[in-house]
Every structure is written in C-alpha cells, then in structure tokens.
Image (tube, rainbow, N blue to C red; front, side, top):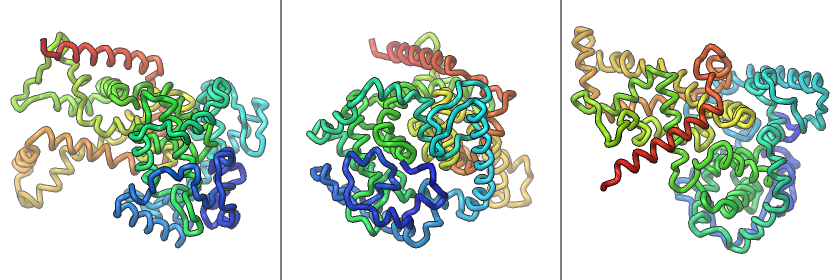
Length: 488
C-alpha cells in the first residue's frame, strides 16, 4: 500500500532515495508490505510464462508510456500524493495547485477533528493509523462524508466493509488461489484480458509504470496481476471483467494485496451484485433503478430522457405487454451508456481522484445506495449546464455564426431548433454534458456540501432498502418484458 503513516506529500514519488535503491527482487511474500518498501526491480520469475507486455500494448500506447516516464523523471512535482498526475484535460496544474493549497489545509483540520472524535470514544491511534472506529451513528456519518484522513483510508475501508470477517472465514484461500494460478488455473480468455489491461491501469500514475532504474515490472503491476488472476479463479461466474483493474489498482494504493483481493470480493458480491457477470444483467438492473430515481428526483432531466421514447410524430413507441409505459427499464435510455461505467468503476476515472476517494469512503461506510446518490448528485449539478446546452448555449453559438447577428431572435430560435433534427443528436448532447461535467469536480466539497450533505435535497432520502427493493422490481419487470417479447 502507498499510504503509510509517515507519508508526506512527496514521499510517494520516485525521487525517494530509499525507493530508488531498493532491492532488486520481489516475491509474493513481499505483498504484505508497503509499496514504498518494495517499489523495485523484479525479473518476474513467477510470471515468466505470461505474454510479454510489449507484444500486447499498441505502438501508440508504448510511445505514450515512454513520454510519461520522461515526464516523471523530469519533474516529480507534477504528481499528487497518490502518484497521479495533477494535470489533466479538464484541470490544469495551476488550477490543481491553487485548489490543493486550500484543500490540504481543510484536510489537516478534518484530521484533527477525527483524532478528537477517536479520543472521545477512547479509541487509540497506533502509528497514526487507527484499527477501530466508533459505532455507526449520525455524527460518524457526517465525519465520513467530510472525508476520512488519507493515511487512514486503507484500514477504515477494511473496517467498514467487514473485510476482516471475510478474511477470517477464508484463511489461506488467497495463497491457495495464487498457487493454482501458477499452475495454469486461469482461463486463456481471462489471462489475455488481464494482460491487456495491466498497463492500461492508471496511465497517469507513477506507481503503475516502470522507471529507468527498474529492470523488470513495477511491484504494483505484479500485485495487480496476482489479484486479478486469483479473483478470476475464485469466482468463475465473473472471471475477469473490464474496470476491475481500476478497482484493484486503487485499492492497492491503500492496502495490502490479500486485503485488496477480499475487498474486490466484497465489492462484486455485496455492493454491486451481478454487475460484473458475463451477461451484465446486474449492471442493467442498477441502471434501471437509476432511471427510476431520475424520474422521481430529477423531473426536468427525466423529461429529456423520456423524449427518447417518442417517435417523430410525437406519439409514444409501444412495446408488447401490459405495462408498456415501463419500456425504459428494458430498453435503457442513451444516458446509461455513460452512467453504467460510473457504477462499474465506482466512479474511478469519472471524477478526479480526491472526489473518487471521498465517494469510496461513503460507499464502504453506507453501502451501494450511496453510488446512486452520487450519480443523481452529479446529474443535479449538471442540470443547469445541460439545460443551457439545449437552448441558450446553442442559440448563442448559431445566432451570430449561422444566421447572422441581426436576425430576429424568435425566428433565429425556431431555425436553431430545426438544427436538432433527430433524437440521436439530442441524446449526444446529453452524453457530452454528463461525460465532461464530472471530470471538473476537482473539489469533493462541490458535490458533497452542495448536494449530498443537504437534508433538504430530496435524493438524500434514498436508503439501501429502497435501492434493494428497486433492484428486485426492475429485475422482475425486465424478466417479464423479455418473456412477453419472445415470439410465440
């Protein structure tokens, strides 16, 4: 894990002399130590039979990796405390540094409040990393939503998700799975997919790329491979599914390899049941539940989604069956092309890293209903931008350029509406907004304080019980609609 108790903002970077001079061997026994102790050169004897990564990566990806390595060695200050690049397509490094100057002070204040909370509850903090937390209550919920200290996250997630109970009930299982993997238990299909995705995991994070001082694979890549292989053998019904590499990769930044494995088991079994199975029906069910939530809590956005089910004459397309008004549960709206990946990745890569980590704090503390709240919160925050893009923004764009600045406003707007000729074009506008908007949520407080911590915001009334009931309802509805649509 990366987040050791004495870690400073620069301790994770490759300029750390202790890391650069680390021993050149890494084996599976080392997986119980911090990557700061193990980030080294490894010849990878355990995986000598695996395909060479260079044969799998495309030429373009290799060139990007080389350029990224050069950037790392040129200026370590380009990266945050987790090893991610500060600069992104939607956020400049200057914007990041300005924000971090303020947010780091916020984080320090929050940590002191956490320490006081634990002291009040007579919980000791060993080596700046508590192993226990108070019983769940409203006060603790507020603390978690305002962010768990970064150094504590690994143990906190493990504690709240019930990881230790899972491990205690399965002593030795992970070691046996690794042994089975070395004997060829992983299917060829899963092995190929895992190898393909290893170096595509966090391309902007220094811990997942080989440095000039390394003669073999980074420790993180080795751990990532072992966890993914072991899981593919542990749960054959799922095997390996894209996006798992990002879940495992992020967990490995905060906890040991075996704990990461059991957290993946918990995520796939408890928090997102059925989502990663080969037919992805669990993912479709969750998207159906999300659509129902949008309909209930975000009526203006729903009005645009609902238009996807209207034909050119303005009449509703019908499907067979007695409840055709629920066709959006079987033929999911275009919007779910984006939101499905939000759930499957648990928002990794959807929002900037600090916001992702705050979401994960709440996911493991409050369970999966919080993912629905986050999705609705993002849509709510982007609502005005979406509505603007549907009217004012396009009006400004075309009124002067297409029709001339002296055109009559009413006439111009009518012509502008005619520019959107198909529902597909309207759907693309929706997708563009919800793809881009979350990537600008650099500050977690922009969504937490404005939406997710406000009791008056209706979507915050969603409970885990309501989501579980919704899953049952959508599953039943989709099953019934499939049955009625089959030819007799």
